[in-house]
Length: 273
Image (cartoon, rainbow, N blue to C red):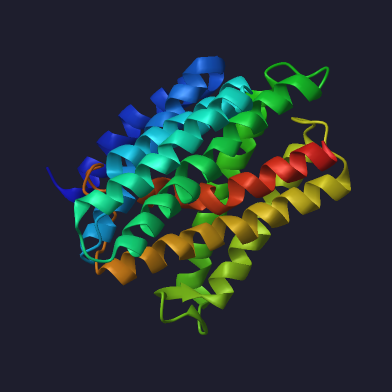
């Protein structure tokens, strides 16, 4: 099976499964975010091992699960107590591991927790909030999450297509030599246009200020998330975060645009919607 066939097969299986879990919402959506964030977190830790760091993967994953449960249940008091004990165990465990770079090992463990479950977990609260606050719209949370995902896809498509056609000036040569300023601007325009279409067809009750601001945020922070992941991969000397998804790389490769974007979208949703 060639590379293109693998990509198509993964898309045929994966996209409907993702759509179903988003539509069902509740604990099903929680399960989806858990799978994405925890697998991506594991990939992040594996990348750090290539630099001879030794992140505490199990403790990091447990901390990630607790954070995701906090976003789903809102029981932050009990979750917070659990996180305190996990953080204490990370410090204590590192002391007895007798590995070099102890401070760095602790650091990359905590970065993995914050960068993935913490950032991506905000998407759980965004969907719950949209379902609760947007009145008069059936399946509001589903539509809101789909707007974000489709806009990211359009942003990536515009950036790639117009970057190849018109790109002359490198965006950040040191991190991602193929990305161009022209492609980045095209991605931003594509993002804004996508949310404008959502507004025009009244898919969600957004005012024009919210429409432009959300479209701009997705275009800017989605591409920033992509750049940050490229930076981590280049730093670790790898092309993909893993080979988990044939033809697509790893979980982190597929959902990197959501990471920086998700907390910003939650803030904008609370303030504007």
